[in-house]
Image (cartoon, rainbow, N blue to C red; front, side, top):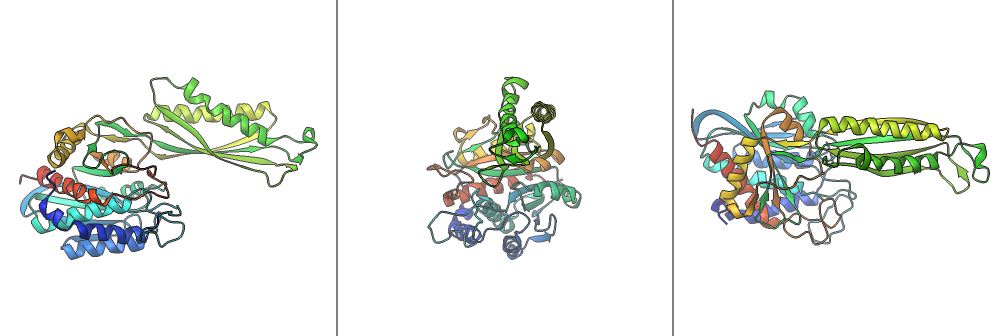
Length: 390
């Protein structure tokens, strides 16, 4: 496996950085310590640092040793999740209720490793921007960075991202041109009834029963309102209502998410949720209010950049270890906002066996053995894509 020798030399230092970040996780838009750690490393490498986009975002800018007008961007996410870690190793989270349960600590360090190597060698022409993004989980830090002028301040021809994938063997990559990950929308349905004594339900309007029927009705959207050839998910993930055993409450709140790969399907799902919620509530004499938010669009790789990414991954791990047509996942990624603004490609890197502790699990941990693989991919991507001068 031809990982970059120089990156292999400082593998243990990369692991130590990763453990430091893992032990001090910070959630969306609160990544002050992580951002400081990243900025300090970049400055030590001699890389120009810009801070402040999306609050805690960090961008490092490095020019190659040869002249060239081209520029690309590489992106890693920095935020943790609001999860209580259940691991017992010595670098487990020291911040109660917060954990790097998605591997963003590893993503950050792989990009730092590439930045260190590229700053030492500068064996490319043009400019590379290292984007360390806050708030990928739920809060759309990528959207905020783009909205605050990321690509106006740092013009590029393409942007690239990477995420670890538990269950995929270490030493493998996977990607595809076109939709790679789904959109992510959320909904909140408030069912408004009339409270009553539980022994006298006929004197009220029961929002619990109406909410239950709405929840079941929503399951018909993907089975009866969308084409069997289109991928879509509608999940009710929360039901809140009532405070005691013998009182029918005034209202019940349902919350959940929807996933799809097409904007027209997002429109159809939102309309179906509204129709079902209002129809069921009206039939039972209840009222309803719907809040629907478009969170993340689908993550869609451009064809040319996907080919480049696959070719570079093949240089690092071998052609047989690169899946160029991976099945899309219904998970979502706010890297999608960057791909809406610029061509680019998002790849999965194998994290090895999950052992029952996949992403967002309190027992998950990033695999330190893949740090030099990911860093080598980033380094070779820059050296190959920016190989020529003007």
